[in-house]
Length: 176
View 1 (tube, rainbow, N blue to C red):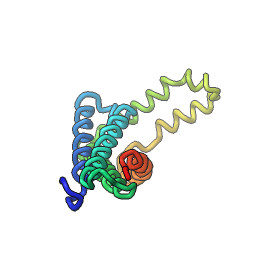
View 2 (cartoon, one colour):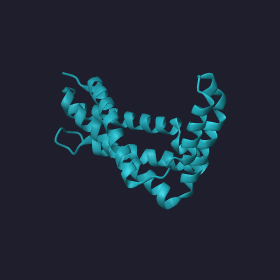
View 3 (tube, one colour):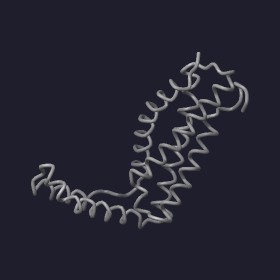
View 4 (tube, rainbow, N blue to C red):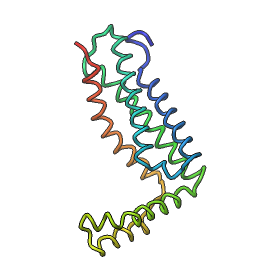
């Protein structure tokens, strides 16, 4: 992948980022499955993908002899996100629906416990008792399953956010 006509660097780095995300997901699943839905896991996934996307952009810039415009940098960077996020969404769907369907109930119980643990915080923030009870009821009756439709919506939402990050990374990578 050393010249400008080589296959897209974003494919390579997207597969690397997606594989790393799956590896981190498996580590979380084996050590503390509840944290698969945590900000920590999401942050690690985002950081790994952003680093890989940046590397894809830098690799593309090098392939173009050190000079690259915004659009040419954006393509491999965003492609890295597209592929990595798709791998992550598929991994989550398979894990929750085929590998360990008990994760859905574990996530539900963890969320209910979180709402109960934050009762004093709700009060401090000015929530009334009925507001708190409504939040608790929503936690108890909410849908926690990982469906195909939900996975597609999640993927599309992540793509929109990733495009913005890709544009920022492209501005960093470009060099006229």
